[in-house]
Length: 328
Image 1 (cartoon, rainbow, N blue to C red):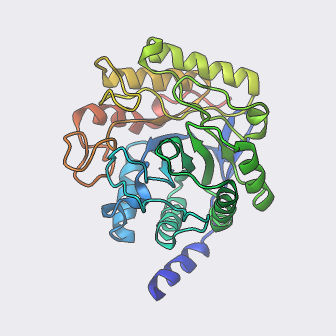
Image 2: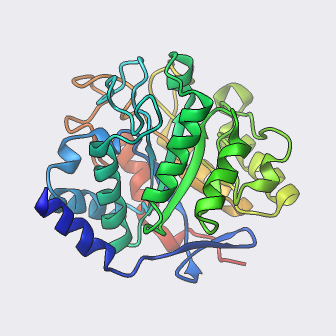
Image 3: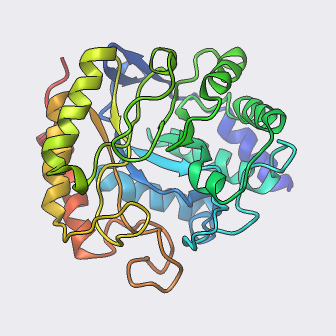
């Protein structure tokens, strides 16, 4: 415990990089930030990732080497779908809204290490997967949980708070709670499943930026549909828009594709979204089954080099500025 406290104290003494917004662009410490994320929902519950600070930093460096500068991480990993690393206790929250010390400590360690490397953490407070599995906080407990997270993460200026994954219950209430505690914290929401771009009335105006889940293969060619959806939101709301959970490959369960996909589908979609003025999070299938399934890396970490399909996408992301459109 003493070593942990010393570690946290030392990281908090380092200058914190601040993520901000100007118009439809992200800035990190005042410089253009080419927001490029990866889904790592189980990050704070994966034991190999947190084996030590050195191991965690090595993984962050590997993500960075492959063009990733944002990790999308979930606070609730307690759904009953059998995802890798999930468990009933895999939640930042206790039932009364107090925070579990272990997950919060790992989250703060991750945020501090990411900050030192110029990486942003998009932290998702609540998930519809847990909600639909009957794992719900009362309104009072949810308010307490949101306030507790906002206070815990105040020193970490490289963190975005996303209220929900694919849901929209009391979003505006939670935005107000966060802003009352930490007015400069960037807050967003994913209001619904793929193709549901807009949340409740007034939500789009209250959020700092938008992070919808664009339409998937059932709506047509995703590399054509998604950039049109992103362009519509940019034109209407004039704030950054992240294609936060675009169409993926893999299992047909959980909103997955019913037809074969190619890594070039993702590459073309990413580039088209960027050309439209949006940002991306690469959404994959490396967490949706249990340990031992062939789609899951042995570590449970979304390793950019795990299989040839994903590696092609990460090799494209690694080229970074070569294909990034110029900032306006």
